[in-house]
Structures are given as C-alpha cells and as structure tokens.
Image 1: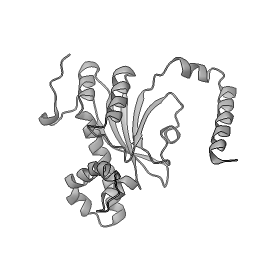
Image 2: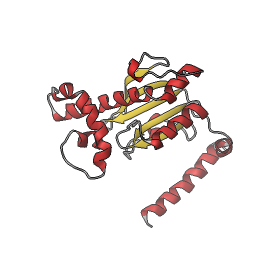
Image 3: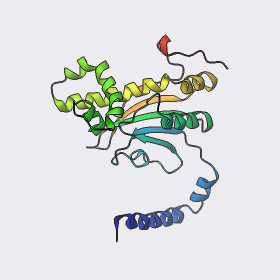
Image 4: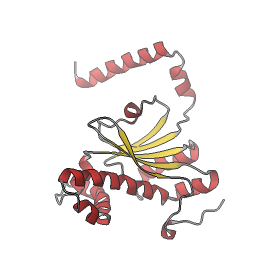
Length: 211
C-alpha cells in the first residue's frame, strides 16, 4: 500500500470513530463554523494546531506559512485575517512559532536559498532590529531560540499595524492578540506576548478609523 493510500484509509477509520462517539458531529460541522480562535502558525509538520491544543475541527481557524509570518503584502494571510476577524468574528488571534524553526535558523545565516530568500528577508529584518540582543546570547542554540521568540513578538506587532485589526478593535473591542512559542522537545506552549484590544500603538502605525 502506498503512503497516500494509507492516509485515505486512516481518514475512513477516523470518520467512523468520530461518528461512533458523536453521531451528530459532522452534521454540526456542516451547518456552521464558529471558531473562537485564528491560529497563524508555521508550516512545520510537527506543529499541528488542533493536535497541540487539544481542540476539535471547527474550533480553530488556521493559517500556516514558513516561520509564522505576518507580512503586510501577503494577500493570502490578509484574506484569512479579514475573514476571521470580520466574518467569523474570532475573539483571539494567536501567532504561534516553535523552537527549532528552520526558517528562523536559515535567516540567521548568509546562505542563499533561492526563491525562499524573498520570504526569509522578512525574518532578517527582525534580526536586524534585535541584532545586538541576539548576538549577545552565549550559544547558537540560545540565539536561535531568542530569535524565534522575538520573531513571534514582531508578528503580533505587525498584526496590530493592520487596518483589519485596528478597525475591529474600535468597532467591536476585539480580538485579543497572542504570541506563543511551542517547544518540540516537551510539547509545551510558552506565551511570550499579549496585546489587548485598543493597545497603545506607535502613532506612525495608527490609522484614523471611522465608525
């Protein structure tokens, strides 16, 4: 049996087991989607949002990319963000990175990775902003770990700079923004940042939002 066929078989087993436990489970999913959370995570296959948070399908709206970035010209990310905030009206937006992130590690080097360089440039900008702090860390592992944390924090800040978030903060008092980091070695999530609705922003990035 090929590996992709095993996935299809696993799906049938999963669907049957869910129906046995809760006969109306899929009926509820079909009728409505009301997640409380938007998860912006890394594409790394070891960091699945539902698995590590113990949540079921329908509870978390998910966007993933390399190194969990919030890039201001990424239409994919911005479309997901707008839908989650304005249509689904999520209460929380979580940026979750992870220690051992390959994208962050690559951005700390001077190697060229082809087309990936265009994406990694956004992480390099985070490094440039915090270079003194990161370079002062005594080991390479500590430098990478701190960069993972700082990168998550900067992405949360970048969320707050969007008109999508600022408009929602003004008009409905949400969502809350969270920065988390997941540790692969023990499966535990570490919160590193939180921004409440209406948090103070640098005037340069604050928009005049009409009601």
